[in-house]
Length: 265
Image (cartoon, rainbow, N blue to C red; front, top):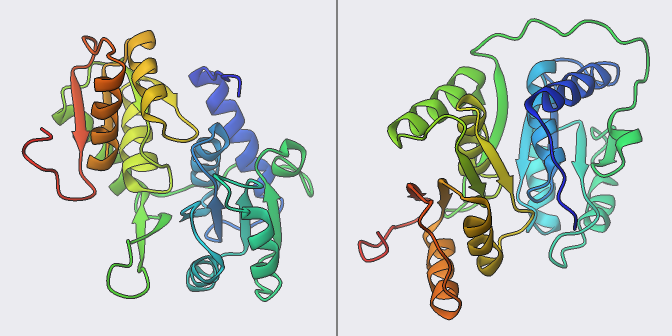
């Protein structure tokens, strides 16, 4: 897949255009689920929904029908934005089956279909006033004890958290970062993207994590910072043992999401 590029001006324009289009189809405060891997459209929805006062419900692209049904019903989502498939998981097919039983879902949109994504169903008006403490996302916990629990996050909380995180990591403004944490997780759409934006970073988004490719990007693009769960970092170390790369550019690597072994650090 060929690389695509956005300047910050282009990201803002696309996000505002999406927000205005969505407001011809949805009301501020409504919830829309995003079920996709790390693609640029995920980030455009993150900012577009926020500008429109719409709440983004994150969905793991590995979910199976029972899990999708639970999250859509529990979050009271009224829309589902997705891609056709990811790593062999037939996302669109599962969605069609599940949504047939959920009358609240008004539309299912393919994120790669920009005509449908940016569709204006009426006259475009101004963006609403959105307050810092308004709900912006519902993220689901891992569900280690029974079904996952929906956690409601607000604008101020997630932007503040990411800014403090990047400051604590001494991230240089304008640094090149590698985004391998999944966007449906707070480490991805919360820390990596919102931190990156507030520090004016150049963010390299990997659609799916592949350790050899990640290592090659670090070397070729001069990556300064990245975050990964321990499993990812261990896979990158193993890939490096097989095919060594130059990691001299890396100044910080964050890890979490599960127990981080001292040896890994």
